[in-house]
Amino acid sequence: MRRKIVAGNWKMNKSLAQGLQLFDDIINSPDHQQTNVLTIIAPSFIHLSAVAEKVKTNPNIAVAAQNCHHLSSGAYTGEVSAEMIKSAGAEYVIIGHSERRLYNNETIDLLIQKVNIALKNKLTPIFCIGENSDERHSNKHLEAIKSQLKDTLFHLSAIDFGKLIIAYEPVWAIGTGVTATSHQAQGMHNFIRAEINKKYGKEISEQITILYGGSCNPQNAKELFSCLDVDGGLIGGSSLKATDFISICNSF
Image (cartoon, rainbow, N blue to C red; front, side, top):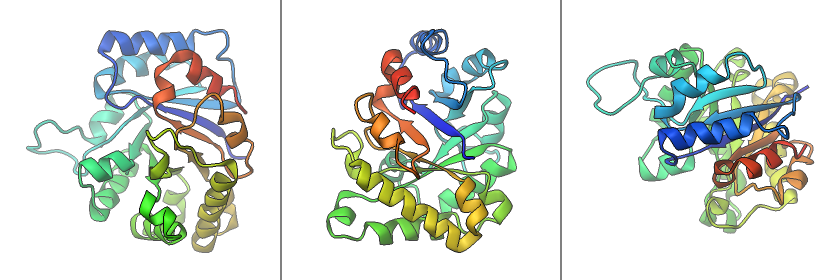
């Protein structure tokens, strides 16, 4: 049975003190008691070590980095390697987020290298795929998702692919206040699972966790998470307020 996951992506928000307070507010809340849901927190790099130290004894909470460099080391000022992230105590890393594809010009080849080096360092990639507004409105969204899977992930062996978490991001719904309907979300998640089945078989396609990552909030999380192929969410803005994030974690 696929584990339910809610991952909070803080993006470029919160000072060190603010981030640690937010984290404490989440994990110390009596309302955050879901033992059948894995909570993953993806703070800024400055928070990783401190947050990872706090979750060492809690099997239901884990830490992710928001990005990693595609090479192991070198003269790359300002970058952070997968090895560094692992040494800080993180177990997961977000790769291919739509904002990094857009603002940092992340290419297919770069994303392939990031996935490979994350796996090499025993980090679990939370790999983001999704169509933009033009692709959705021109009915090319299925083609776009199929291409992203094939071009960036289908080089992996079945064993390595089975280690991934997929996050479906309808890019047209991120930060816009627009949310995919539960019907749209289920349709895309089912399509993704079907494509994985074609490549790797039913066993792996059924075990892969696929998260929804497009303006999920306390008001719509329950309906989205009730969909057969939606295994949780990659949460942006709503992860920055403890009560909202906890409410989403409790939406299964």
